[in-house]
Image (cartoon, rainbow, N blue to C red; front, top):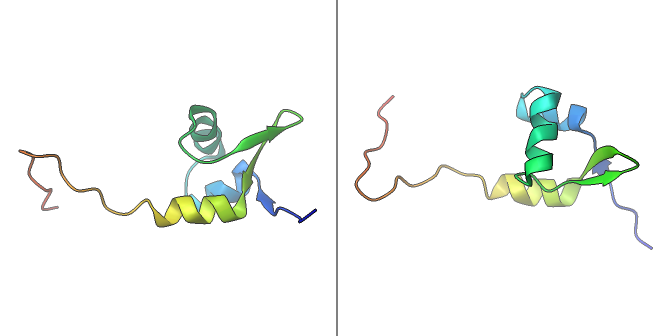
Length: 69
């Protein structure tokens, strides 16, 4: 069976420059790809990297202006 490299919320928080509690909340909400092992959140590195690649700038909704700041 292949080994899956996982990251903790603390490691993800350093990458995203967020508080670890925020990363845990995002995992719980299903915003970032994560799973629990023994009550501890884990994030599959490969799935996380694919998720990050899809998180580019969002297009404004029709009728909304882009921010110029």
